[in-house]
Image (cartoon, rainbow, N blue to C red):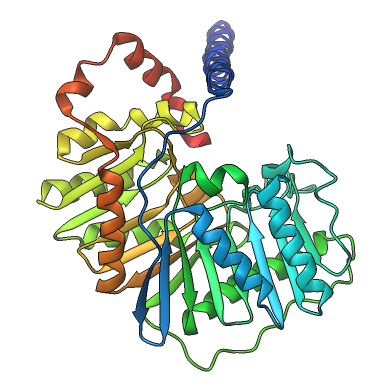
Amino acid sequence: MRWRSGLERSMGTLRRVMLTILGVQLVVAIAMSLVDSYRRRGKKPKPFPTTPPNQVSIGESTVTTYTYGRDLYDDMIAAIEGAQRQILFETYIWKGDRTGERFKRALAQAADRGVEVYCIYDGFANLVVSPVFKHFPPSMKVLKYPVYAAGWRFFDLRRYGRDHRKILVVDDAVGFVGGYNIGDAYETEWRDTHVRVTGPGVWDLKRAFADFWNLHRRRRIRHSERPLLLETASTWEPRIRVQRNVPRLWMFPIRAMYLEAINRASKNVWLTTAYFIPDQDFVDAMKDAARRGVDVRLLVPLKSNHIVADWISRGYFSQLLEAGVKILRFRGAMVHAKTATVDGNWTTVGTANIDRLSLTGNYEINVEVIDRGLAAALEDVFRTDEGNCAPLTSADWETRDLHRRFTEALLRPLRPLL
């Protein structure tokens, strides 16, 4: 009995130590976020280079690439204003500022002239948005994805994912998808990437929206809301595929899509992401590709809008640099794009970051395209961004201060939470 009592005391001490360490990590993370937020007040991002919209034909479809928010928003609004039958609009963040009001007004006007307008936004991501802005006319069908969606199923991990997708589909004719949220800052101050799709490639975007709406429509006030029914497309474009994560169904194909492309690479892997907090298998795939002679480049923000994510991300840099991966850090502004090109033939643009929340947690959507023309267009975008980057060398990285190494190690256990 004495040894059992000693074991229980030891286990109790161990639990207290572990909780203390976790508490310290969380306190440090919160303190870093507050200090960074204070330092950013009143500061404007610096101008950054962009590439003009570039349209590529792929079979009966076209794909247009956007790297500047104003260009994208103008074309999205034009599509909404030209809608005749139906608009499907979904966004993670929908600010109540001038840009947010512009979209809300265009959608309401479309509904007033008889267009079916369906809207989805994430409740948690818009907690700081004024409740007044979230009052929509009854002519619009609006689904607010709840802040807490698990209900009484506290331990059902499938119900904790956020709706991180950004989709606009108009009249089966045009669809938009990518990293841009809706707000003034994103219009001119953030470097992001979106694509406009026409032709058969639009259908999978429409299905993705309808499936999400039908899965969650009973969260709306009107529980009798009818499902969003779609006709089956008569044609489809095999070189354009839409990959979507659906936590409720435990489906996460975007991670597998990335891993397959990286593992098949023989020439180059150029990857841009806002937040880089992958699992070790993903890191190993990048390292293996670099070691077999593939030109692997990772482009991330020098300073993102989430300082804790930046510090945790840096914990991967040593092993990547040692394997020959080139790390490029975008200067002066937030790069929020989620894109990759492989071997001048494979491309993806979408909403998923390279982190646990995006790859194995949230509702996400990426367009996967196998086409040399689009790959060339995205490589041009990457080269433009690269010209605004500070390359990170192994020598520079290994001489960083001791306190930086300590902070990286202290925050490393928080990786599974981000």
